[in-house]
Image 1 (spheres, one colour):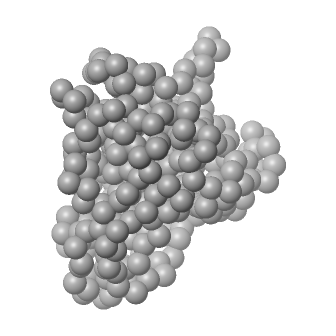
Image 2: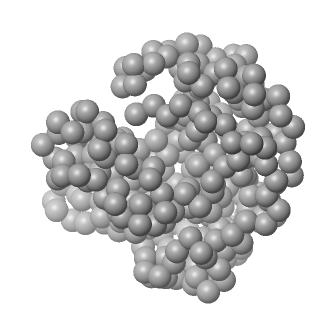
Length: 283
């Protein structure tokens, strides 16, 4: 919690106002932020200075792992996070690549599970790195990337959290995740949860110990209509200790994650929190 609150305060103290053309709003913006999460100690980075709904974040991550491209599939898992970008983003509504209601296009998990090369080759990045890590192999390229500039026009949103690099030292697995853009009041807690859970899950299905997850953000910002709530409400609250995340130990393979896993396979212990804060969401 301390590093999260420190980042929020740093944006307020050091950030500069930047107009965002996509949303038509101004953002108080900071360049470069580094966070880290101790997955080995199970210090789950769930925000305590406001109520946070962790299952929606894990559901979204599971949808990425499965390569979903439709907001309805994400809803079935338990998250509505893609409803707005699939159905309310005017530029996407006018895009000829859109295939009807709820279609998201070639974004996030689609790229991670079915990256298409110029020669038509399809690459399953996640399966490759899982297979390597299960066999104790780290070729310094155990990378899951959702960032495909050649297909930006085929999706409703460029990926914000775009690349995950896994590193193996002995029997301990580490993760470094890169994010180009971060809505700190709303999006960051989702991103923190997903980085932590991704390392925990991949370590578990590969039979490895999780180490630390490192989270690098390029553009960290607070929207103009979020600033007062962050400054005058959330930052004035005292945080509680970090809770613990419990993952069903029967999840043992990538196929398990692709087929039968649901949100019932995840639970949190010891989550104390303040009241929710209704931050505005910018599409």
